[in-house]
Image 1: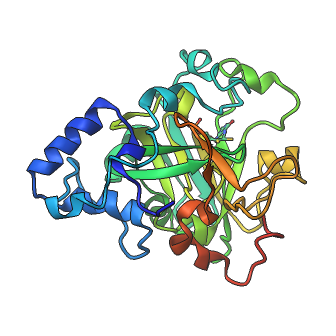
Image 2: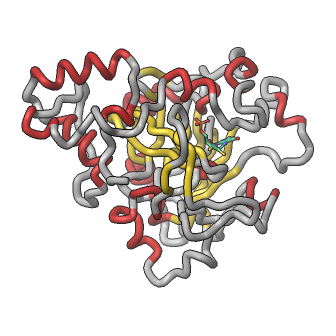
Length: 318
Ligand code: MTE
């Protein structure tokens, strides 16, 4: 599979069809570099730009939309979700999360930082320029999607709070609200959902805090109002509905590490050569497509992400 994402991989949603039509007619390039850089694995070309996205005609050839794999539709992204706070059944968070309150919402950022701070979600939307990033997402369960996120690099938020030299990791926490999240009454999991990144992973250009997808605000089942997206890692690292980010000195224990220490590691980099103890990771099922496709090392973001793990044995640090 090529590192480029074809338009047909993105989706068949109406706005993307009309955007493409628009792109063909326009020659502004700002946000075009965004789509291209997010998908081309060019380390030095982080996407920056304002919508509307536009791609010059001469670059349109890079986005073959005739022969690419079938699209992930907006419907599939909304209706096939993993959100254990609501249900372990992928179709149920869609309706169980209907009444989930996402406004007002605030996110506390603290720990080893010079400027601990609480951000309101509207403040976050205004402070940080929202960009579109089209990323593949590969779940540890061996299914995948291609999702056009709206968001901003996590590093922009971290730069404001200024991590101190003691900060080595970021620990993220999902809201704990059992009265609205029925799954949080399931004692099999150590709620709240916690995830973590090493500081350099958190500061990476591709690491996103997402506020929307398909040009619209996130829906509750997809992690509204704010979630993490780390495209080279298994999807469980991309924690939803975040209320707390702490800069810490020790590696955080995630919910999945605590639940299945032999099955889920801290790094969780997509790796087709290291099987899950219960299934192969060599291939994946692209939602909406027939058959299976080969899984790529670092989910195809090897050029961007591999340097973070120089000298580490990926079979040990899974
Ligand atoms: N975050 C929380 N808080 N709870 C979850 O159950 N599931 C994870 C991740 N983030 C999960 C979560 C898993 S396993 C995956 S694959 C992705 O969210 C799925 O994101 P999506 O449902 O938006 O496709």
